[in-house]
Length: 175
Image 1 (cartoon, rainbow, N blue to C red):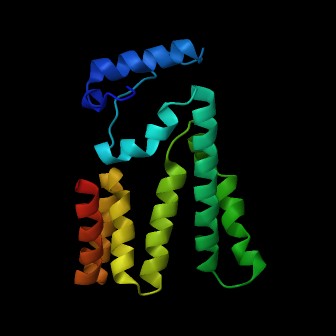
Image 2 (tube, rainbow, N blue to C red):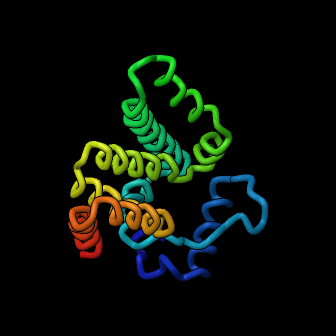
């Protein structure tokens, strides 16, 4: 759907574009392995630069982007543990060899990005940076089921400052 944002939520147009992508790149996918775009429009902007590249190159770049995001999350998560290598070494071990990580990475999902955003928010929350924590959690609202739960917990524990950060991100993304 290059340059056709008006068709982003058009199920027929999305399915036709996905079928063309599957056919042109000789992807071995079962029938019905295509689906609608469920994210908010602003999230599509992240993929706009990739959409002009050949599929394989775009997928590879996205995969490396997600791996970089996971590496950032590992660093942040490790810093939350006592400074012994036995503890901090568990984070990459348990994460990188988990079936969900392997499946999400292999399927080009945005799980690495989601993990990094949630880890940033938790790290800022723990360091008593409520406005920045709220702003960070506002970024995860491309997955509202995650954003609403974490934002609710943050608002209950931190209060208006988290709401201010969340509002800042929300207004920015909506505009």
